[in-house]
Image (cartoon, rainbow, N blue to C red; front, side):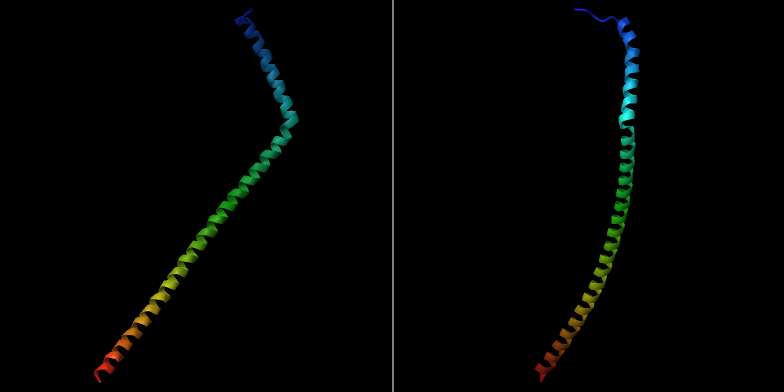
Amino acid sequence: MTATSLEQLRISEPSRKISDEKMEQVRELLLGEDLRRTEVRIETIENRLQNLESDVARRIDAMQARLEAMSGEFSGERRASFDELAKGIEDLSQRIKSISRI
């Protein structure tokens, strides 16, 4: 078994750095433009998604406000109908009482 000495490791380390730099340059030449285009596309999609999220949130808030307003209108109309019905029943009760007295 041959053990690598510390001195040999120190000597081979700079050559690794050089080969790593060369590999990085090759990656940049082969894939750099595609990576940049992909990053631009992703950023564009993220911006669209943010715009859609804010638009949907705005629309949901508007729909919620509209539903609350409609609910208030119906509650008011229902209350008025019940009041009118109660008055009609009271009038009918009074008529029945007056008829029964005769």
